[in-house]
Image (cartoon, rainbow, N blue to C red; front, side, top):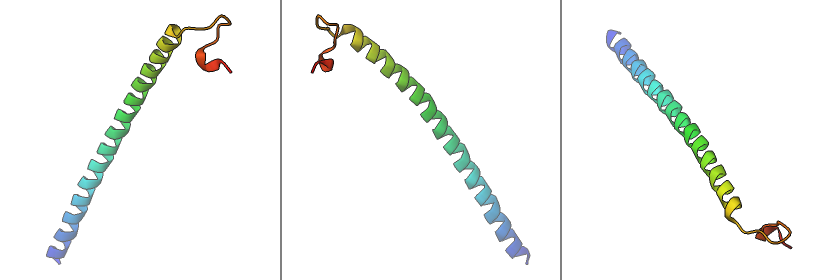
Length: 68
């Protein structure tokens, strides 16, 4: 009986450690993705602003892709 109890206790401790590592790892992944998403969005907005500023317009003030 003691052997059986020790096996179950060992398995539960092992499971708890594994699950806590998964939770920590998933939290870390979500945090990194959130930070990179913000950085990527800022970089994209900055590059779009730069492109719009440096793209030549025609006499009507339209960009080349707005012409029909």
